[in-house]
Length: 150
Image 1: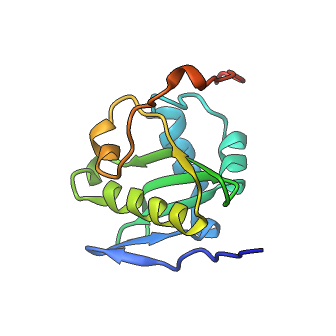
Image 2: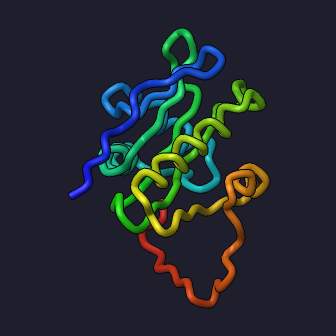
């Protein structure tokens, strides 16, 4: 079986990018997702903790070590990956951090050799199009089942 280790920390213009879930301040992720995001407003801390535990996560930290961005990849590391909960705090937007994050996740998906990486977005189509994400060509083939609402 092919084993891929997570990349180590890397830096871009003074910001540290880390796949180390142990250093992610889950309270900061919770605060953003539950209070500011449009997709997870009202999510519980317990669900945030479980989602971090069961995903590949990437945190972005400023020079003071504070979380300024976050994202996660849900994947079987073989066939499928889904990007979720990607955000950059408003004060840090426009610096190219989201592009570096998405590229890091795309690179990881390529290492896993997944056949399909998906995501859902309301307003960031332009960002993801830069990384070859496109609208579903056959949306009639895809189905969804809703679960818990927050």
